[in-house]
Image (cartoon, rainbow, N blue to C red; front, top):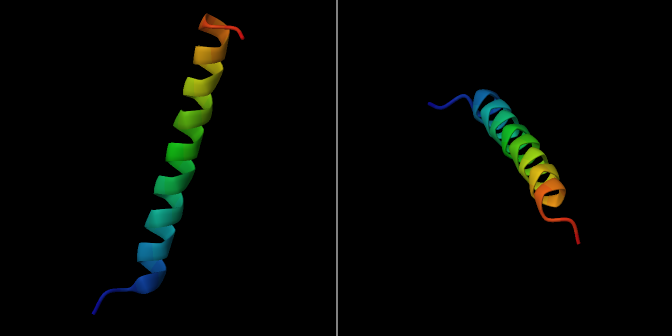
Length: 35
């Protein structure tokens, strides 16, 4: 059996990491190409 609590924690960590990288990339893009 799969421990769903561990799976959910991994998914939350992945989503948090993706959100962090996305926000960092957006800030860099805005700095390079101001609108």
